[in-house]
Image (cartoon, rainbow, N blue to C red; front, top):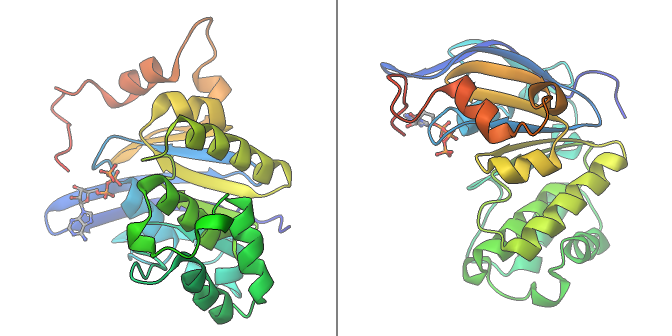
Length: 245
Ligand SMILES: Nc1ncnc2c1ncn2[C@@H]1O[C@H](COP(=O)(O)OP(=O)(O)OP(=O)(O)O)[C@@H](O)[C@H]1O
């Protein structure tokens, strides 16, 4: 595993016309940890991840993976596994077939597809078309795709959304297992209670950065919950800064 920081944001801003989606954020993702990128709907989570992955260009600043912009990183698709709506997805295809396409593009053997299908618990359902998968199955399929190249850094946009309680528990243990092997994981979410049970580090954004650091430094007091801290960092729903998504 590389010793360079898996992800680093330096004074990153993104504007869409007059709308500032991300305002001057700086933070690092620590290697071997699970980091939760938290924020309300429209807070700029997906936009931040897209800038990290070279799918959107920062208006100012730089986001890097292993010290380089994603498009300059050698073997980026092998080192960084991505699970994000609309990325690497051909919904008309059957699950296993779709993964075989990506495996071929990555130069991986067919058996790797069966390995990841087994890992995410989809081995016996992968002959269905991706568009016919349930939301939870689609999440597992997305994670399978992200894992194909056995990456050292996983970036997952809202991986918990749509999972049932079994799926949530599975994902938590699964991500902890991957981190236990030394991998770095960056997940975005607005499901605070779940994140609190899964992550080591927390980054809270509401256009601008509100917190970046260990979860246990943010939630350090007796009986303190992430939810309370979150609202004290981003303000209440009625605050003037509320973002319209
Ligand atoms: N391609 C785009 N063109 C114009 N505005 C955009 C574009 N992408 C995002 N935005 C705007 O940028 C802001 C941040 O959106 P983003 O999707 O990053 O938020 P998010 O935190 O991921 O929200 P959610 O939890 O709802 O997915 C929103 O105001 C959104 O409308």
